[in-house]
Length: 184
Image (cartoon, rainbow, N blue to C red; front, side):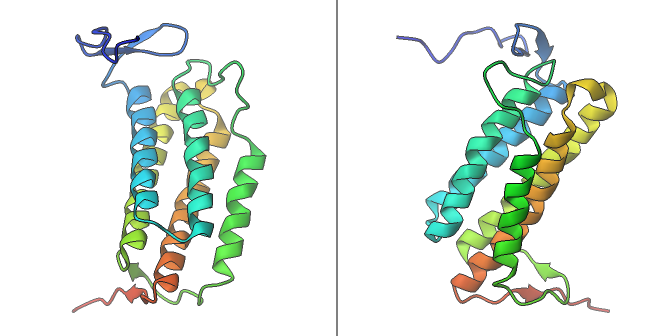
C-alpha cells in the first residue's frame, strides 16, 4: 500500500513533473493549486445535483482541468502521454456557451451572483476560474515559454461558460437573475 503522506513537502517545497522542486509559494504552484481549487468547487456544483445536461458539461470540464494542472506542473508545459490543451477544447467551451445562451433571455444589465444553489456554486466557480486565470497570466509574464497560450484562452472561455451555466441553472430552477441596481 502506498501512503498518502511522503513527508517530502514538510519544508515548504513540492516537486514538479521531472523532479524539480519549488517553494509551495511559487507562482507555478499557486497557479495549478488554484486550478485544483476550481476543480474541487465544480465537484461541489455536481454534488448539488444540477440537471443532467449541465452535469455532463461540468464533468468534461473537470476531466480537462486535470490536464491543465499537469501542464502547469510541468516546467516544459507539456506532459508525455497527454494531449495538450488546444483549439478543440476551446471550441467545445464556445459551443457550450452558444448552446446555453440560446436558451437564455438577453442580458440587459449586470446581475448579482446567487439564486438557486447550483447557480450560486457556479458563480463561485466562475470567480475561482478568474483567479486561476490571473495566476496563470502572472506565471506567463515571468516564464512565457512554459505556459501554453491555449491554457489562458481555455480558462478565459471557461469563466464565460460558468457565468452562462449559472444563469441557465437559475432559469431551470425557476429563479430569475437578480439585477444589480446602483443605489445613489
